[in-house]
Image 1 (tube, rainbow, N blue to C red):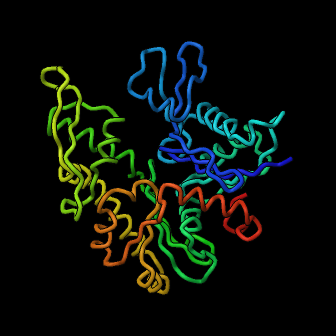
Image 2: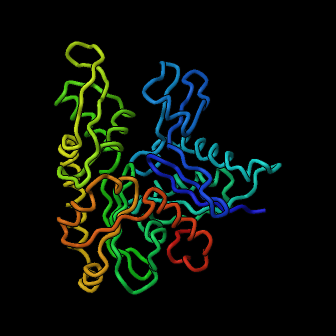
Image 3: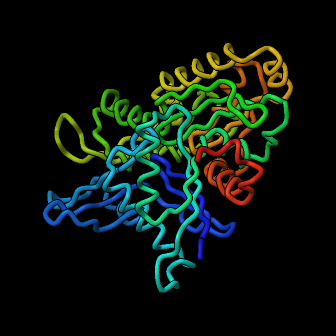
Length: 336
């Protein structure tokens, strides 16, 4: 009577794998009615409401910097996602769940307990936790049990996780709170200061996806984009055209901080593993790695080859699913 699910609880997106298929892939957002305190919508539906609500509806992002910030909302969100899994919908009563859940590597004991308690309340009988870079490495297809060093950089929505992995363990790691959300805020700030245009989070997110770039000389640059928002001087709605070069300028400071974190992790790596990394290169995972030119920029900074995972958004959840299927093999990696 036990069902197995793997969850990647992300700041931006939550993904769930059930019987080897990704059954849930939606934004980690909840819309709550202020008066009754009821949850009106989660995921895609709540995402469409973001920035467009009246005073009785509030949209919440229950996870901040990769950890649970709003306990109640996150629990209800996980619950609704699990209830929405097609195979579990057909059952008469909720089954006991065996879960493997991803957590950032720089997480504290208290934050770990919050994740575990949320899972237990949604009927999780056996709950295992796995560090994100570890899950990403498994998802990319690396053999993490070998006595060989691999470097993973997982750029998510709330945190960037950098880790050097060997023998099924994390040798040195760094977790920085600079990732997709910070990029989005950089774009909002840039539009405000350079164009006097006030834009919302959803618009900034679209800019990042459609013309975002880490370097200002791309081989195949995206087309310029027209952006609508509110003029800060006149208060009227207005439109401006922006290029990918401007976005590269807006994101520059944050990317420099990610580069510094990568360099710092490399400088703490034991020499034998550093020799391995010189041969294997650096692997990028997470949604942030899809930023155009980021791989080239990191490669220039570190003088190492940089590879992007084939489906970077799902690398972590895929790894979590593999760990769930082979619990006995990965029992040293999982935190019970």
